[in-house]
Image (cartoon, rainbow, N blue to C red; front, side, top):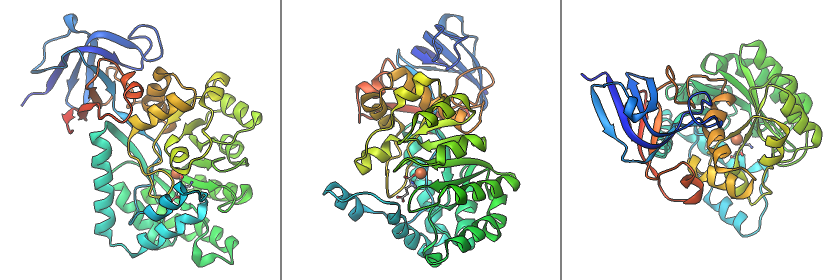
Length: 391
Ligand code: NIG
Ligand code: FE
């Protein structure tokens, strides 16, 4: 069986390694080749210097990019919220409360139904070039339902996040302190073995700064690393808390003070922007330009969930970020690949450099710029994950 594959005649290759390419952050190489050996990248460079391989694939002058790294999704759920979306598009506002509808549907679903849903949305994402993804619990909100969500998620990815603190469970409507006790105690004990990350929705109508701090600190004590739903619907303490607790990522970052921007620029926490949520809730866009100009690391992700952002398309998020959030096409591509990897503290994905995972997408276009230039067009024509063609 062939163990090396060379993809030749790549019109434009994004490596995300400035040392390998034209000196820019994307490390672009023209007329390039990539050699894959089993599940890893073995070599990148100009086609005319490519080493021999067992099989060759002709990219025919088209662009190749690292597989997208979608560092924020909520895929363990049942049902959908079509009516809520319809109402919103007729003028109704979005609030955290809609999450309860999905909690009821998710609790009523069987393990097999939830597993099939995760698999279906993942296939959908993979076809569109996403080769690494994170996903969360948060639609169970009982010890049993949160733990099973994470167990199911862990069968599909290593990047699993405990979000028992999505909203206060309806069962604890009169006792939010009791719910925080559950989330930091028995529920955390049951969930921690399946998760790498702990998250909290720090927002009016969900958890305040003190509650969020207690939840993230308890998660840290169990070996989980924080990431935070921060400053999505209003200004608040989420971003500052994320930076203070050395969270891998502060997600949403839609309403930021100058202090929030400065904290993200100086700290170790990636700002993950989720334009699908602003699109789907008709909200003001996060200001990516302000964050980038301040020196923050920015990731782009889908936030795929049935309430606020029911898209699995990283290409769509790139187009929105370029059109409406002040990002250049190069910056948006970097944020959807290397930025996502930074938000997951991964060095083996989001780049095409020797030793990285052989996760890549071939576009039906001469350049990655077409992802924003030709919005809504299915440009991903081939996907390799772990060196295998999977889409
Ligand atoms: O990231 N903000 C909190 N959680 C999700 C929304 C979940 C829902 O509405 O079901 C988000 O937008
Ligand atoms: Fe989210």
